[in-house]
Amino acid sequence: MFTGKYIHSVDEKNRIIIPSKFRDGLSQGAYITLGLDQCLTIYPLDEWNKFIEKTLQLNTNLADVRKFIRTISSNAVECSFDKQGRVSLPLELMEIANIKGECVIIGNLDTIEIWSKQRWEDYSSDPSATFEELAEKLAK
Image (cartoon, rainbow, N blue to C red; front, side, top):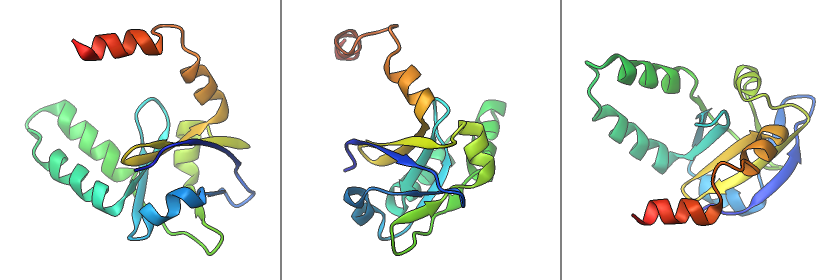
């Protein structure tokens, strides 16, 4: 389970350090791809396989399903980590997620998300619904 929030810099080779707390959960391998809300998502290998299994159950006769599958799979890259726990972010994904300089790495229970620092600040301060309002909506 991945929890917590960390701010890290992107180096000149487009690498970020994955927090040591998260690395054990990625030891069997991982994939990085587009996430929802304009972030990047790192899936540990077992979660990636579960995600693929669920995705393959979708009705590919529907254009939206085909587009979703193509978008996710064409942007998915197998991650490799160096001895310092760094991962290289594909330039195309960085551009889509507007990641430059600093980024925010958050644990999202079964996945890890990488956000542009500005995008995360905008997203997390969105006044459209407070935490309490969201909890109440989800309880119904």
